[in-house]
Length: 272
Image (cartoon, rainbow, N blue to C red; front, side):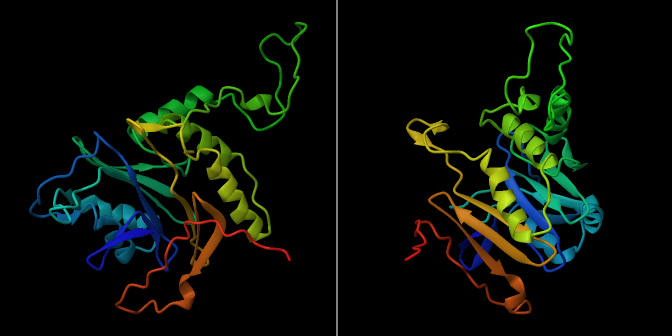
C-alpha cells in the first residue's frame, strides 16, 4: 500500500516474494533522523521499506542489515517532508520493531507481533504486564473465592481490564490480547476473515477521535500480506468488501509500477 509521487512508491507497508513484510507506523515527536554518516549505510525514511525488502528475505537477515543502517533526514521533496515513523518487520517465524530516536537506531524483538504508535516499543512491552491476569478463557474467581454474592454473571469476564480506548497504548494492548488469544483455522479464508475481525476491534471510527479541531481520524484502510503465498488482502473504511492481489500473477522481474486503486465506495453484492 503506497502513495505514488513522481513515479516513486512511498510505501505504508509491503511484502516481498520471499515472505518478508514491513510496515511504517506514525511515531510523532519521538522519531529522529540523522545527517548522512560516513561508514554507515545511509537510507532515508521513505526508502527504508523498499531497501529492506529488496535486500532481505527473512527477519534474521533484516536484523543483520539494520546493524549498519543510518536513517537520514533527507526529505522526498520540498513539498513532501519526512513522516515520523517507526517500523514493524515480520516473517512467518518472528517479528521486530525498528525505531530511530534521539538515542539512535534500536531494534526490538516483538513477541506480541503487533505495533501501534507512540510511545516507544520498550514502554509498550512493559505496559502489557499490567494486564497479565486477563484471559480469553472462562475466568476463575480469585478476589475472594468463598465470598458471596461474587459470581460470574457474564461471558468474557476474563477480559475485564483490557482497555477499550483508541489511544495508541490502549490499542496496542487490545490488539495484542486479541491476536495472541485468537485461533487459527485450517481454512485459510476463515483465517483471513478472522484477521479483519481482529483489527476491527481497534479501528478508528468517524467522530470518536478528534485529531485537530473538527477533523477526525478514521482507519482509512486495513491490509494484510499472506507472506507464504504472496497475496495482499485489503479493504477500505467505506468499502468493507475484501479485495486481493496475487503477486505471483504479476511480472516480478518488471521495472514498471503496476498500480491498483483502493476501492473506496461500497458496492453491495446483489444476490438476485
